[in-house]
Image (cartoon, rainbow, N blue to C red; front, side):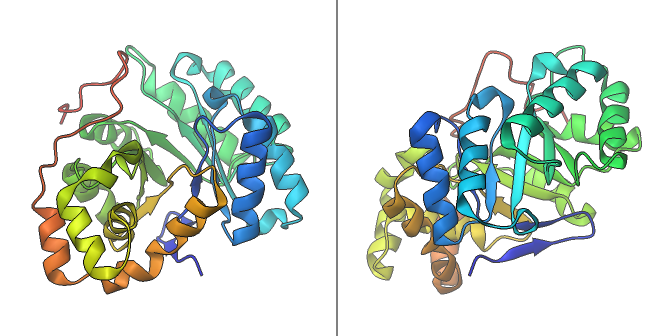
Length: 276
């Protein structure tokens, strides 16, 4: 059973399926497999060019729409109000749904009109096109600006894993009931080679990647969306749920003590992560 995070702003499954690079028939098969295993939270984006495949999988699954939590995102060069609306309508059409459970600004853009973006997100929520809205890849300073404008995002999605701290953003999100969704929670697979995680995994009869997921899953207000194309990987990620409760204080302290400055996702349009 996948645990659910409930705050004043959002109710969202704590483990979802990330779909970056899962497109076409492979993407559809991956989503169908995940849904058959009990996943209900599917994360996609206009930029992934896979919403039609995801939508086909949702339709083929037979799972009732109200049981699903579907997230999509608008790309950073489409943040004018009408462009946001066009992106949203395109996502809804390709996904074959009347609404999104969560709609995110994928990346901030230099010189973006944040008040206009906020008004548009609030409007599409009021119209019922999205149940919740949020942002992705916003540093603390932009989160502060958003709040000063009267914005109340339900979710912030950022890269977060055992070798990258997001303590400042967690300190911002938790008291406000904002879910922090960790993308690339396995360091794009590289955490499998981390010696401390390997040692903890050996003691628990698990894998290092399961330990990395379990460390995140046990945290307050944190949601994880690992990409997993193969059913075996999807099942392995589900097995991290009971492991989260089995990690000892010593295990957690050892992971907490690892270096936390290894950022994997650094496109040239990244914001200033130190903007406070």
